[in-house]
Image (cartoon, rainbow, N blue to C red; front, side):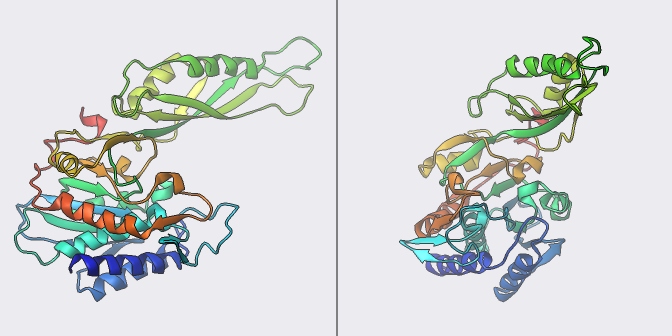
Amino acid sequence: MDLDACHEMALGLVRELIRIPSYSREEAKAADLMEELLTRYKQPVQRKHNNVWTEYRIRDENPNILLNSHIDTVKPVAGWKRDPFSPEMEADRIYGLGSNDAGGPLVSLLACFLFYAGKKDLPYNLIFAASAEEEISGGNGVASMLNDLGIIDLGIIGEPTLNKMAVAEKGLMVIDGKSHGSSAHAASGKGKNAIYETMKDIEWISSYQFQKTSEWLGDVTMQVTMINSGTQHNVVPDICSWVADIRTNERYPNKEVFEVIKQNMKGEVSARSFRLNPSFISTDHPVVKRGLELGLECYGSLTLSDQALMSFPTLKVGPGDWNRSHTADEYIFVDEIRQGIINYIHLLDGLIIPRNGSEPSSTENH
């Protein structure tokens, strides 16, 4: 396919995807559409749950590059003035739920794959994967299919980044805390107030500063976002529970941050998961160097994507603006999609990359 045909296909597909509600865990019809389109273009199709992928392999010894974005969306927020499932065109914009996050990056990556599929002189093998459950980091999303893809040497993750290269991405860890006291009548002056015990732990969280900062992501940040205690006004509470949102930089794996927190808590604390670690790719990696040659900027992303679940080198980049994600009257510019396709094609043009293992992307390997 030439560039114009790729662009036409991408614009048509993003409009079709907008018409199909595809909330996380409800992506079956969108996955059906991806299967049908790949079959239409005579590409071999594989599917697991609502994840759909295709492969173009030149030689087994070639490195493997994964082009990945997601087909699921969040539910429409309040304030939409348009039909979220009607792909309206206006002033060179395509409106609709998922148009920006991540319809534009998804169709641009697919266009790039179809541009290269059939070319015999590629120095790598290509895999295109449209994955599910990205918005909830779900177990039946990309993580469920990675083993089926084999060894991946580089992942290009399609997200709306204003076509900038996210060379680092903050990780996420949610922790639950609980403090214990002893109940008594509030008028008695007795008992041990669990809220006061919790305040000691919250004070530590609000004031502690992890030493290692990041050039791209800044500091590890911790925010207590939920707290619950008490049964009625005249009873000293004996239990106080709380939840904190922890955003880690690439200098720390989540588990290391959790151990520091745990050692400094007076009450109980547990992590819901350590799986959403921060990501990082060196600016010396060939794909980043290629992007810099093309004039693409590097930055550190504060928002989470599926690259948190990948242990191989990944670069997050794509058309659209993350500030439009999850907003009312979401849209993407037609020209953004075209430029996204061009950028992806140029990033991969003759790219020579190391085999997986020599350029780790996860802080667990640093």
